[in-house]
Length: 253
Image (cartoon, rainbow, N blue to C red; front, top):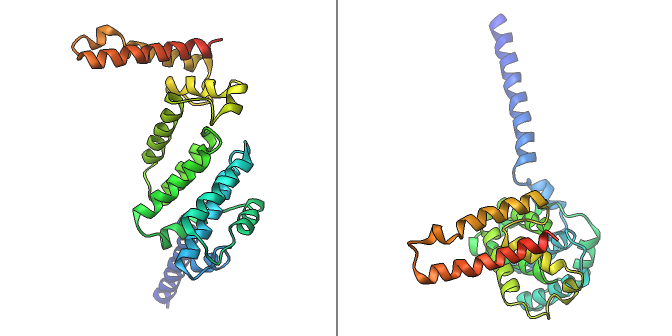
Protein backbone atom coordinates (compact mmCIF):
# COMPACT_ATOMS: atom_id res chain seq x y z
CA UNK A 1 0.00 0.00 0.00
CA UNK A 2 2.82 2.37 0.93
CA UNK A 3 4.68 1.55 -2.27
CA UNK A 4 1.54 2.25 -4.32
CA UNK A 5 1.11 5.63 -2.61
CA UNK A 6 4.73 6.53 -3.25
CA UNK A 7 4.42 5.55 -6.89
CA UNK A 8 1.22 7.61 -7.23
CA UNK A 9 2.89 10.66 -5.71
CA UNK A 10 5.88 10.23 -7.98
CA UNK A 11 3.62 9.99 -11.01
CA UNK A 12 1.71 13.13 -9.99
CA UNK A 13 4.98 14.99 -9.47
CA UNK A 14 6.17 13.91 -12.92
CA UNK A 15 2.92 15.05 -14.55
CA UNK A 16 3.12 18.40 -12.77
CA UNK A 17 6.74 18.85 -13.89
CA UNK A 18 5.80 18.09 -17.49
CA UNK A 19 2.91 20.57 -17.38
CA UNK A 20 5.15 23.34 -16.02
CA UNK A 21 7.85 22.53 -18.58
CA UNK A 22 5.32 22.63 -21.42
CA UNK A 23 3.99 26.01 -20.26
CA UNK A 24 7.50 27.43 -20.17
CA UNK A 25 8.25 25.92 -23.56
CA UNK A 26 5.15 27.55 -25.04
CA UNK A 27 6.23 30.89 -23.61
CA UNK A 28 9.80 30.63 -24.85
CA UNK A 29 9.41 28.77 -28.12
CA UNK A 30 7.27 29.16 -31.24
CA UNK A 31 3.55 29.77 -30.78
CA UNK A 32 1.24 26.79 -30.73
CA UNK A 33 -1.65 26.12 -33.11
CA UNK A 34 -4.27 27.65 -30.80
CA UNK A 35 -2.33 30.90 -30.59
CA UNK A 36 -1.74 31.01 -34.33
CA UNK A 37 -5.46 30.67 -35.02
CA UNK A 38 -6.02 33.89 -33.07
CA UNK A 39 -3.56 35.90 -35.14
CA UNK A 40 -4.62 38.43 -37.80
CA UNK A 41 -2.70 36.48 -40.47
CA UNK A 42 -4.90 33.49 -41.23
CA UNK A 43 -4.79 33.11 -45.00
CA UNK A 44 -4.58 29.57 -46.33
CA UNK A 45 -2.97 30.71 -49.60
CA UNK A 46 0.85 30.86 -49.31
CA UNK A 47 1.23 34.03 -51.39
CA UNK A 48 -1.42 35.88 -49.40
CA UNK A 49 0.14 34.69 -46.18
CA UNK A 50 3.56 36.06 -47.16
CA UNK A 51 1.94 39.33 -48.28
CA UNK A 52 0.26 39.75 -44.90
CA UNK A 53 3.47 38.88 -43.07
CA UNK A 54 5.32 41.64 -44.93
CA UNK A 55 2.56 44.11 -44.04
CA UNK A 56 2.52 43.37 -40.31
CA UNK A 57 6.29 43.29 -39.89
CA UNK A 58 6.54 46.53 -41.90
CA UNK A 59 4.08 48.19 -39.53
CA UNK A 60 6.12 46.97 -36.58
CA UNK A 61 9.34 48.47 -37.96
CA UNK A 62 7.66 51.75 -38.94
CA UNK A 63 6.49 52.04 -35.33
CA UNK A 64 10.12 52.03 -34.15
CA UNK A 65 10.81 55.41 -35.74
CA UNK A 66 8.10 57.99 -36.36
CA UNK A 67 10.43 60.21 -38.42
CA UNK A 68 9.00 60.72 -41.92
CA UNK A 69 6.40 58.02 -41.35
CA UNK A 70 4.48 58.88 -44.52
CA UNK A 71 7.53 58.32 -46.71
CA UNK A 72 8.01 54.86 -45.19
CA UNK A 73 4.36 53.99 -45.69
CA UNK A 74 4.60 55.10 -49.32
CA UNK A 75 7.75 52.99 -49.77
CA UNK A 76 6.01 49.94 -48.27
CA UNK A 77 3.02 50.41 -50.58
CA UNK A 78 5.17 50.65 -53.69
CA UNK A 79 7.41 47.73 -52.69
CA UNK A 80 4.49 45.43 -51.88
CA UNK A 81 2.76 46.42 -55.10
CA UNK A 82 5.83 45.41 -57.09
CA UNK A 83 6.51 42.32 -54.97
CA UNK A 84 3.04 40.79 -54.85
CA UNK A 85 1.08 42.42 -57.66
CA UNK A 86 -2.62 41.84 -57.21
CA UNK A 87 -3.76 39.46 -54.49
CA UNK A 88 -6.91 39.26 -52.44
CA UNK A 89 -5.11 41.26 -49.78
CA UNK A 90 -5.72 45.02 -49.83
CA UNK A 91 -2.38 46.48 -48.79
CA UNK A 92 -3.70 49.90 -47.82
CA UNK A 93 -6.44 48.61 -45.52
CA UNK A 94 -4.26 45.94 -43.93
CA UNK A 95 -1.34 48.31 -43.37
CA UNK A 96 -3.62 50.90 -41.79
CA UNK A 97 -5.03 48.22 -39.50
CA UNK A 98 -1.57 46.90 -38.65
CA UNK A 99 -0.27 50.38 -37.78
CA UNK A 100 -3.12 50.87 -35.31
CA UNK A 101 -2.54 47.60 -33.48
CA UNK A 102 0.43 46.20 -31.60
CA UNK A 103 2.27 43.39 -33.38
CA UNK A 104 3.66 40.48 -31.37
CA UNK A 105 7.06 40.04 -33.00
CA UNK A 106 7.52 36.54 -31.59
CA UNK A 107 4.29 35.46 -33.24
CA UNK A 108 5.26 36.95 -36.58
CA UNK A 109 8.64 35.24 -36.35
CA UNK A 110 6.85 31.95 -35.71
CA UNK A 111 4.73 32.46 -38.85
CA UNK A 112 7.90 33.07 -40.84
CA UNK A 113 9.63 29.96 -39.49
CA UNK A 114 6.59 27.83 -40.21
CA UNK A 115 5.70 29.12 -43.67
CA UNK A 116 8.82 30.71 -45.18
CA UNK A 117 11.02 27.66 -45.15
CA UNK A 118 14.11 28.74 -47.05
CA UNK A 119 16.83 31.09 -45.88
CA UNK A 120 16.56 33.02 -49.14
CA UNK A 121 12.92 33.92 -48.42
CA UNK A 122 13.78 35.15 -44.94
CA UNK A 123 16.78 37.15 -46.13
CA UNK A 124 14.55 38.90 -48.69
CA UNK A 125 12.25 39.88 -45.83
CA UNK A 126 15.18 41.27 -43.79
CA UNK A 127 16.40 43.20 -46.85
CA UNK A 128 12.93 44.72 -47.21
CA UNK A 129 12.93 45.84 -43.58
CA UNK A 130 16.37 47.44 -43.99
CA UNK A 131 15.33 49.21 -47.19
CA UNK A 132 12.16 50.37 -45.45
CA UNK A 133 14.13 51.83 -42.55
CA UNK A 134 16.55 53.57 -44.92
CA UNK A 135 13.74 55.00 -47.08
CA UNK A 136 13.76 58.23 -45.04
CA UNK A 137 17.47 58.75 -45.65
CA UNK A 138 19.11 56.74 -42.85
CA UNK A 139 18.44 54.19 -40.13
CA UNK A 140 18.48 54.79 -36.37
CA UNK A 141 19.85 52.44 -33.72
CA UNK A 142 16.37 51.45 -32.53
CA UNK A 143 15.50 50.19 -36.01
CA UNK A 144 18.75 48.25 -36.33
CA UNK A 145 18.18 46.57 -32.96
CA UNK A 146 14.58 45.72 -33.86
CA UNK A 147 15.49 44.19 -37.23
CA UNK A 148 18.40 42.29 -35.69
CA UNK A 149 16.09 40.88 -33.04
CA UNK A 150 13.59 39.76 -35.67
CA UNK A 151 16.37 38.26 -37.79
CA UNK A 152 17.63 36.22 -34.83
CA UNK A 153 14.13 34.93 -34.10
CA UNK A 154 13.81 33.75 -37.72
CA UNK A 155 17.20 32.06 -37.89
CA UNK A 156 19.14 34.82 -39.69
CA UNK A 157 22.53 35.71 -38.22
CA UNK A 158 22.57 39.15 -36.61
CA UNK A 159 25.87 39.80 -38.39
CA UNK A 160 23.95 39.88 -41.67
CA UNK A 161 21.90 42.83 -40.40
CA UNK A 162 24.92 44.76 -39.17
CA UNK A 163 26.90 44.10 -42.36
CA UNK A 164 24.02 45.18 -44.60
CA UNK A 165 23.43 48.26 -42.46
CA UNK A 166 27.09 49.18 -42.84
CA UNK A 167 26.98 48.73 -46.63
CA UNK A 168 23.90 50.92 -47.01
CA UNK A 169 25.29 53.63 -44.75
CA UNK A 170 28.58 53.62 -46.61
CA UNK A 171 26.76 54.12 -49.91
CA UNK A 172 24.81 57.03 -48.44
CA UNK A 173 27.74 58.77 -46.79
CA UNK A 174 30.32 58.16 -49.53
CA UNK A 175 28.05 59.16 -52.40
CA UNK A 176 25.88 61.81 -50.82
CA UNK A 177 24.57 64.40 -53.31
CA UNK A 178 22.04 66.21 -51.14
CA UNK A 179 18.91 64.80 -52.74
CA UNK A 180 17.85 61.92 -50.51
CA UNK A 181 18.46 63.43 -47.08
CA UNK A 182 17.96 67.16 -47.52
CA UNK A 183 15.76 67.39 -44.43
CA UNK A 184 18.47 65.82 -42.25
CA UNK A 185 21.20 68.02 -43.66
CA UNK A 186 19.17 71.11 -42.77
CA UNK A 187 19.45 70.38 -39.04
CA UNK A 188 22.83 68.70 -39.03
CA UNK A 189 21.52 65.21 -38.23
CA UNK A 190 22.98 63.70 -41.37
CA UNK A 191 26.48 65.01 -40.68
CA UNK A 192 26.39 63.84 -37.06
CA UNK A 193 25.40 60.33 -38.14
CA UNK A 194 28.08 60.28 -40.80
CA UNK A 195 30.69 61.35 -38.25
CA UNK A 196 29.56 58.66 -35.79
CA UNK A 197 29.59 56.09 -38.56
CA UNK A 198 33.16 56.96 -39.52
CA UNK A 199 34.27 56.57 -35.91
CA UNK A 200 32.36 53.25 -35.73
CA UNK A 201 30.05 54.58 -33.01
CA UNK A 202 26.31 54.53 -32.37
CA UNK A 203 23.99 57.47 -31.72
CA UNK A 204 24.24 56.94 -27.96
CA UNK A 205 28.01 57.62 -27.95
CA UNK A 206 29.28 59.97 -25.24
CA UNK A 207 32.11 62.49 -25.60
CA UNK A 208 34.39 60.01 -23.84
CA UNK A 209 33.39 57.30 -26.34
CA UNK A 210 34.18 59.68 -29.18
CA UNK A 211 37.61 60.50 -27.78
CA UNK A 212 38.49 56.83 -27.23
CA UNK A 213 37.25 55.78 -30.68
CA UNK A 214 39.31 58.47 -32.39
CA UNK A 215 42.48 57.54 -30.50
CA UNK A 216 41.99 53.86 -31.26
CA UNK A 217 41.43 54.38 -34.99
CA UNK A 218 44.20 56.98 -35.27
CA UNK A 219 46.65 54.50 -33.76
CA UNK A 220 45.56 51.80 -36.22
CA UNK A 221 45.98 54.14 -39.20
CA UNK A 222 49.32 55.62 -38.13
CA UNK A 223 52.04 55.30 -40.83
CA UNK A 224 54.28 53.41 -38.37
CA UNK A 225 51.65 50.66 -38.22
CA UNK A 226 51.59 50.34 -42.00
CA UNK A 227 55.28 50.57 -42.74
CA UNK A 228 55.27 47.19 -44.47
CA UNK A 229 51.96 47.72 -46.29
CA UNK A 230 51.72 48.39 -50.00
CA UNK A 231 51.20 51.86 -51.45
CA UNK A 232 47.46 51.38 -52.04
CA UNK A 233 46.87 50.35 -48.43
CA UNK A 234 48.87 53.31 -47.11
CA UNK A 235 46.96 55.72 -49.34
CA UNK A 236 43.59 54.39 -48.21
CA UNK A 237 44.73 54.63 -44.58
CA UNK A 238 45.71 58.26 -45.11
CA UNK A 239 42.29 59.04 -46.61
CA UNK A 240 40.59 57.20 -43.76
CA UNK A 241 42.60 59.17 -41.22
CA UNK A 242 41.42 62.45 -42.73
CA UNK A 243 37.82 61.20 -42.46
CA UNK A 244 38.07 60.23 -38.80
CA UNK A 245 39.88 63.46 -37.97
CA UNK A 246 37.09 65.52 -39.58
CA UNK A 247 34.49 63.39 -37.80
CA UNK A 248 36.21 63.82 -34.46
CA UNK A 249 36.43 67.61 -34.77
CA UNK A 250 32.79 67.80 -35.89
CA UNK A 251 31.54 65.77 -32.90
CA UNK A 252 33.73 67.66 -30.43
CA UNK A 253 32.26 71.04 -31.32
